[in-house]
Image (tube, rainbow, N blue to C red; front, top):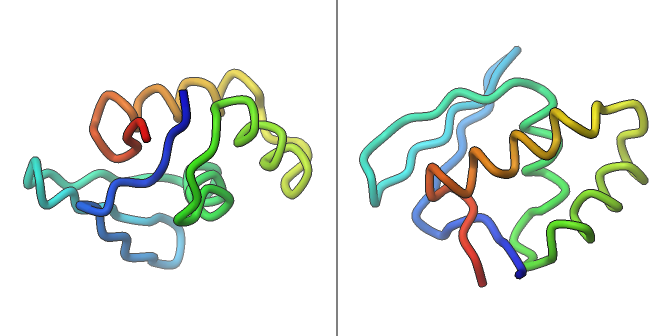
Length: 84
């Protein structure tokens, strides 16, 4: 399965958090620095779960693997990441 950031989502970055608006669900989601880094790595690309984790580890060593897994799964549940 490949995932990507939904085109229905818009991100606004602030000093210590980012807010994502999903215009399909009309819900706002607050993400921390770790989440923002994950979304930054994904960008507009479509990649597998493992590809995304590998890129995250390459660019941001030291992020907690369990936290990354949980974040990606939550973003899929919230329709911020979608299957492609």
